[in-house]
View 1 (cartoon, helix red, strand yellow):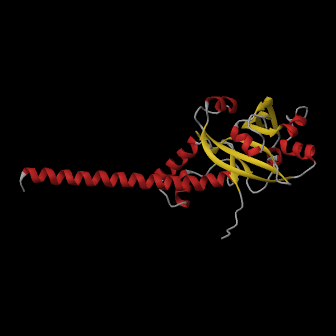
View 2: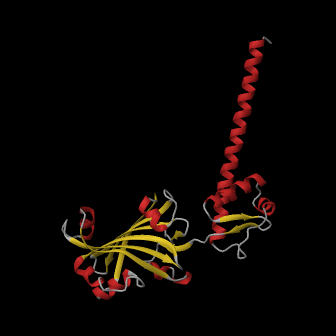
View 3: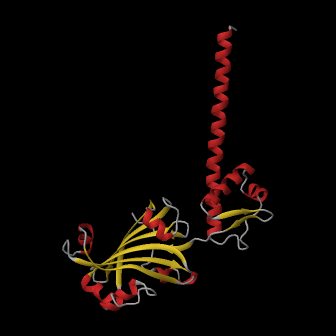
Length: 262
């Protein structure tokens, strides 16, 4: 074989080896993500009651994975702040996510009452001109005053969410002297209006925390937060509460029960 052909043949074998190596790395990364998803579900559901995950060898045997795949999966969970490796102990759960249901219309304190005490720090509260998108959704004239409230909400003292709320002023005025530090707005709205809340339209998406939100939530700048936009209506259909809620993504998990209907 001429020297040039031997060089090309060797180069081709090298390219094949590199491609195969990259394919194996991609496969291991895919398997690690799959394993991380399974372990995340277990630790959030209390599957490790003593707070310690099984040894890497045990996990590898249980999930039919290699030790490298298990280590990579645990690295993903560690990057999320859910677990940490302690010398002489192993991998332990260091953070807890709290469940927030999406299939019932409830205030935060009502939703998380089994997990501790929700308190509210009212950072801003008062009348403010309604921006056009807010006015449209609350069915008030653009530029008319609405009650604007900004609250930092904590669970057991830990920052959990930053809530920006807009309420029509004819209802919101009665909230000015209310105990917003210890009471959900939902309960206060029902007391003020004499009506039950009826339904809410929600949108949920992940966004990066801006400088202000990150500072208030004591989260890293640019960290992912769950943004819940919710427009709540009274039982008679009137919209009364437009909220933009930023949840710390490392402390909350959203869930719901869905029924298939065609």
